[in-house]
Image (cartoon, rainbow, N blue to C red; front, side, top):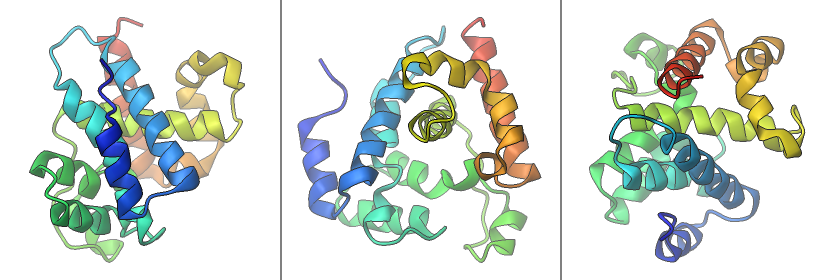
Length: 181
C-alpha cells in the first residue's frame, strides 16, 4: 500500500499545485519515505509521506519565501491536520529561529524542526533538489547522500547561509548516524 494517496494528489492539484512543483513534491515524499524506512526508530510514516507531499503547497500561490506560511493557510482551509500545517510553515530554510524569521520579515516565532519526521522531510527536500538539478547523476541517487556535505558547501544555493547550512548538515549527520552509515 502506497502512503502517497491519489486523494492527496488530487487535493494538491485542485489547490493549484501543478507541473514541476507537484512532481517535486511527489519525489520528496518518495525520498522521505525511503529514508524513513531505514531508520531504526518508530516513525509516523503517514506524517512523513503527507508532510513531504504537502510541504510546498504554498507554491500554488507564490514562489516567495512566504510560501510556507501561505501553504499552511491553504492547508488550514482544506482541513489538513495541524501536524501537516506545521511542516509547511517550518520547512523554510530547515527551521528558522525567531531572530532569523524577524530578519526575513516572517512572523516572529520558533520554526525549529522538533520531530525526526520533519527533519527527514527537509533532508529529502534538499536531496531531491540536488538530484533533479543534475549535481549528481540520476543513476546514482546514493551519491547525493554520500557527498551531501561537500555539495552544500560547494553550492551556496543549497546551504542558503551559514545558519541554514549548519542546520542541514546537522540533519544529514543525525539521519546518517541513525541509519548506521
